[in-house]
Amino acid sequence: MRDLTAVEIDCHRDRSPAVLEHYGTVGDATCGVFVVRSPVDREQLRIVASSGEGWDHVSVSRRHHAPYWRELEFVKRMFFRDDEYAMQLHVPAPEHINLHPRCLHLWRPLDVELPLPPAWMVG
Image (cartoon, one colour):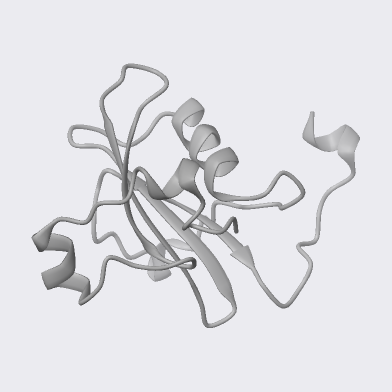
């Protein structure tokens, strides 16, 4: 994941009292809450980023519906380096936990390389 104190990311950091009360901090180079305008319709994307326990994680939510693919791709490019893979994870139904119906997640393991299909299968 990128350094979240980099100017182009940190300028979007939510430093509100609500964030401070909920998390106890506004974050650092590895975590925080951010508000970014959607490249689709300029509405707010609320982003929570963290790194720990072997994972980089970014969640993206909107007020009235789940983020569009273009928005998730925009956030991936903003929060992860160009040479990093990130994934959505679709778990079996019995393991599905939905704490926020309009939120999508990106994950990147820190200690293992993601297995990838051949390039011709992806495009």
